[in-house]
Amino acid sequence: MNQQTKKPLIVSLDDDVQVLKALKADLRNRYKNDYRILATTSATEAIDAITELKNQGSEVALFISDQRMPEMLGVEFLEKALQVFPRAKRVLLTAYSDTDAAIKAINDIQLDYYLLKPWNPPEEKLYPVIDDILDDWLASFSPNFSGLRIVGYQFSPKTHAIKDFLAGNLFPYQFLNIENNEEAQLLAKNNNLSDKELPTVFFEDGSFLQNPDLTTIGEKLGLNIHATEELYDVIIIGAGPAGLAAAVYGGSEGLRTLLIDRKAPGGQAGTSSRIENYLGFPNGLSGQDLARRAITQATRFGIEFLSPQEVVDIMVKDNYKVITLSNGTSLKSKALVITTGVDYRKLNNTGVEELSGAGIYYGAATTEAHSCKNGEVYIVGGGNSAGQGAMYLSKFATNVFIVIRKESLQDTMSQYLIDQIDNTDNITLLSYTEIIEACGNGHLEKVVLLNNKTNSKETKEATAMFIFIGAKPYTAWTGTSLLKDEKGFLLTGRAVLDHQEGQKIWKQEKDPYLLETSIPGIFAAGDVRSGAMNRVASAVGEGAMAISFVHKFLAEN
Image (cartoon, rainbow, N blue to C red; front, side, top):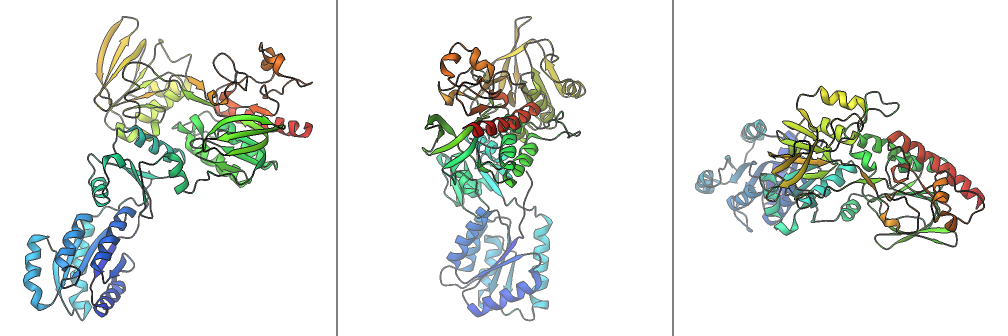
């Protein structure tokens, strides 16, 4: 993730207002271009402020504190400050009578300097000292990340879900592992965070959410989770390529359009590290980049986008389509387009469910790639998503193994990906193989491989496993109101009438439109539809086509 940085701070503290005013003025005259200057007369306020600064991801370069103060002695304050910013430099302001305390502090709190008052002229008695101290600090300074930070455990399903959500919504973040990261441990200590309160998300303003759900995070980040209208011309459910295309065309053609997604724009395609066969992008583009461009384009045309928000029910009332959201809210629309796409099928072998989110992931190659550095990674599946994931992970892992039950990838993966894999030294194809067991204490440590040709078993070390084993439609939430094929994909067009229940259900004089489901005015596009092509380009085309049928439906009704 890209880092965002702020100027480091010089914090000055003195209960004498006039002395503090003079010190602040001298510091600003010399250092304002490179440092932020914070000054206060209260030691208690200063302690609270630096804790807040730590939460914000700010860095303190230097503390300058008077020794004799009513709330606490300067040495005591610097000792407390050291616990929050251990790398900051420390200077004590003293009178001649306090030099013994200052000398003692050099040993007790590694005081960098004690400065006698008054320091006039500053060019001789202040700036040379501070310049030298700051130069020393800068020599080992590495700017802190000051955006979103997640403090939690690496092998935590909840932490993984938050990382995946932020990445999908294009929010830069930094993950701090509480087990081995000093910054994470300081944040937890300073804010009295227990294990039960992790993961905790720290925001740039210094606030934080303990063990939050995705909707709460989204609302805090300014994502829209509440609709502004009671009635729409069309509501699009699902923001994958088909839904995004439908939103662009719905908005551009003047329809009151609402797009809803339960997680982030892009859908399953949004997790692809590189799509190289999409028209118009000869160098390829990531799924996230495609989603970013599309949602920007759609919102420019005035559509509303609700995320993260989940639709849990559909009903028809007085010719209006009424949807119910997971928070209990109901919304009306004249037409619906369902573009909820597909989920990866679950691998039900021993140990997989217990370690999901803790070294075993469905998709999510880009989110967890850095945790695979110098590791042994297994990819389960032989489709394009698996190939794209393998290529991306090969940049981080020592070895990447693609596990397939068949002999080769020829029937399931595009040739351009097969060629790339063949030319990548640290990717190995394990043919006629399946992972029958995942092992580990709290996180994935080993996998048991079965060669289904020789019936031999082998146990191997494993850092991570990424599963891409085909797709199941995300349609269970629709209940029995819409006709589906035997695999759960939505039937549309002529396939509705060919279904054994189709003639009973469809009561219109005309046949269903090509993308129309068994309920008039409800359309399906993209991978969720029975007979779909399962390509990004075809999903985009169907999304655009669905809006054309919406126009025809609205004109007739």
